[in-house]
Length: 504
Ligand SMILES: [Zn+2]
Image (cartoon, rainbow, N blue to C red; front, side, top):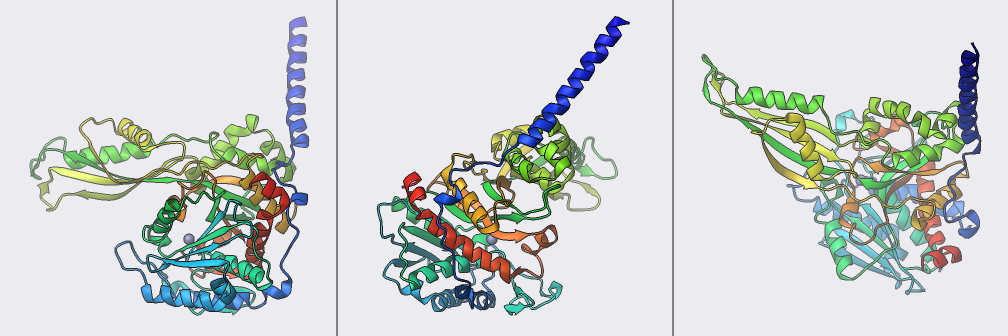
């Protein structure tokens, strides 16, 4: 009897202890303190009047169909040159200033180097691209290349991917130069012309050129993830999600061989049968789930202090609720892709005649590689899953995942992005890292710095995600104005005394 009472007391103590630890952590979880506080950053902002007209300049840019169709097609040369001219006409001070060197790289990309008044300071590199993806015009509610400004939106292909950042960077620079406010620190702006079809003619050439010149930018900032609102349970305000890595790419062809023969007396096993078994096994035994080992943990942790009560308990106690969150990640295909190398069998080949058993059959497997794995890891998992030693593997295309850029509280460039977001959107809008599932031009600049970030400074809700490469692409005027303010503030912040002292 005494033992039962003791056991009950012990159990109760453990439960009370656990509850108080969980609640204590939820109450005490604090916001990340990045290197720069508001006091360190510049308080300069654009005059609202100076934003006037910016939406029309973007809209006119959207009227120029700079469409990249495929790697094998020539770039839309004439349209890209028209777009260059539009940028020159829209930002005359930038393109004529003695402080800015404008270079056309490989005929169609643009490289702008802004000389700082203190040229010994390290530069930083802002990227964007000028091409857009094709449209299926009949699925649009408005003509995709009319560049309409209507009901508070700027509408057209390229409005969020990503002519808005090309324009926003140049708008902020134009305002500064026009006001005689020469940047203190050198700045490089690279505008590629073929990002949507790999960037190998644009960004790759610029990346090479900058390397030859010995450029060592403090960081690279390109298009990427957005301020996401309504995506995270329990978090009402937008969360600025910065891509700190990009998944890699691996296309494999696996081939099964077998005996050919007439279909009336089929040999056993057939190549098709073996291939089908292999495909089945790949789906049944996918690549390992790497939840808990990448930036997703920091993203969850960041949300703790601003989440509503029940979620706050969860985000502040990842040690306890990790398994629950992992299950939630695995249920959502987009979240799942962020913590796992994905596997998609995209092409099947085998057979040529209805009554002949073919001697070989093959499948193309498309993997997007997690930054925590490399090609050999992924292929070893595939071989293991298929467990057929006679299956042949051939690598068709491969590019590794990019390294994970630093995102800790002490990492100055990440802290600067977080500080700039906070300045613009308020103290409740926090910044968190994530792995990007799509690719950007940053792959051509990885050799210049370890600090490579992918962020599109616009607020996006779940129902708007489909606009990327989809239909009815548009940006609200408010979002666009904030995009301009973001770059303006970022530039001014890079020149503030505290930032210069940390990152000379
Ligand atoms: Zn893009």
